[in-house]
Image (cartoon, rainbow, N blue to C red; front, top):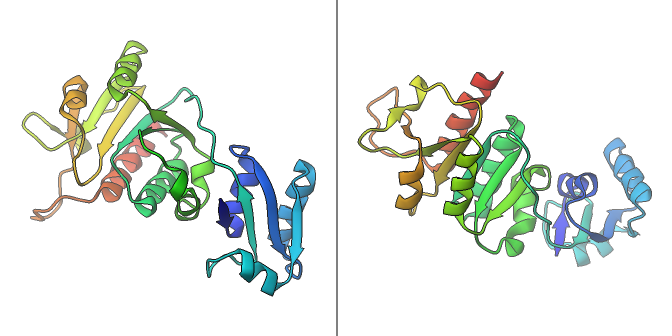
Length: 233
């Protein structure tokens, strides 16, 4: 696949989550950032082709590549590290998912569990919309979400599901457990009933107005991870 833009290419070079077969770079770009990228390329012994703008335009189809792109292979997934975990279930739009990963990584979350699907066709978009965080954060695919969550509980994690229902607690009143998994569903279907039954607590976001509609998944995630960051400081 082709990825485009300095942020995406730099993330691929720095984080070693994927193999890189060739980098295309504007031969006339000599900025500090591009010189740093050239240094990374040399240190990693990655093949590079210095191109003029016409050659780049023939290879890179996007309009915002900024003079650099790369041919790369699919990202390798990770084992999750110790620390808080977010399970994102059904956030399928690559721009929304990318924005979610950007917020999580920026606010200190290292571990993300994704619902099972093929993400390979959207990786270029995910890298761009996440500002490179797609290759920075620890990602794992949940082959069996229920089994994964039961294993987390056995390891002492508290499971929180974002769900507005009877018995749900206002997230602004909750002190999170030292080790936590947060489950957020997409707008279409939300979290499955089996996973909700496994949760230690259901949380909802109380509003400061008479707004009657739900926040979208990314806006809700921003609230959760901001509160988590505040409590973990």
